Image (tube, rainbow, N blue to C red; front, side, top):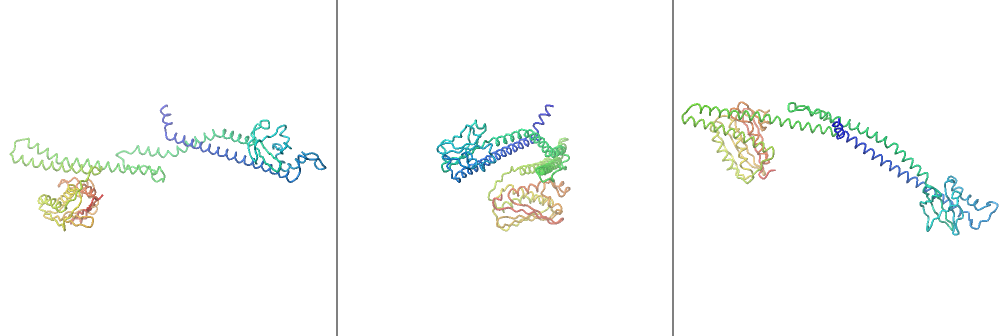
Length: 476
């Protein structure tokens, strides 16, 4: 139970729900604060506008009546000064008479004050200009009073209004948020879990399907790659990875089978000949023949291992080219002279046609290895008593080497596969000639390391031409 709870609280579902709730509450708080500030500012602006317009209306009324309030005398219209002032104030305060504080003063003192001021006087010291400000007087109101002071010709008019209603409205707003905040929190948590469950349910399906895929069923694919979202891209990436793993496993299987088969043959021969040699004493000549055969089989295993080692280093970018300027004709000539000895075993000849001497920047040892492999391939698959033709020419930035033999050729459907590792176009001929299907793959790796290309064209049962193109300079 404890482990299940621990797993739940550390799961992505819980974290997503928590983040969703947190973001939701943060947005709610920001919205609430924004509304609170907006209402406060708008209410204060409306109150300021109201008391300012009232103060202006009162001051304008006094100035338009042309009365001297300080020397007022009763008449048939106004029996007292208060009646005169209330007549002036009527339009300004008719809608806010109860809560509006009004005070009119002159240089001699307060001339008039509204009844709600009782025995209080609004005292504003050292203010010589029109002003909107906050006023505090607990005898008038326990709330802040917003006040407008206007100065006219001989008179000062003060109109003030308590902010009680604004504060009450904002208080109700706070209470409302305190009530709905827990509800919003519960909704956000529930919504977070629903969203996380729906979002991650596809992840669960991917996990289940992935756990079912083993080395034996790498042809299986994870469904969901048709979605154009992050999960779809994840599925496609995983399927591509499974495809690469499948190719790697197939390569390893091919490698294991081919290496085991090719190494088994020379080892079996070595073992058999050694057993024969140990059974009874034989003439010296017989032992020499056995040693020669053992030597050939040892060389064969060495070539197989060397090719495998080279392919492995090439695929892992562990080969460093030792480039230097090389005169190509002497290099090609030495390769041809060495391979002529092998060609003689099948009564074949090798002709060399080089239009001019060419200097090229290459790793001479690796290029020789590539040429040996192609010419050896031409000898193995060429007709006996035929001639292998080698030619080379140059362009502005490249040299082209063509190696042509007349033999069994390569079927059109096998031409593109000829450079693949462990691929053998003719299984029966390859086994007789001792090939493991790595020679041309090594050639391709060497040429591509130099920044060049190698290709083949063949007519089945007729001519086969390998073409190597190498850049004269550093290539890559």
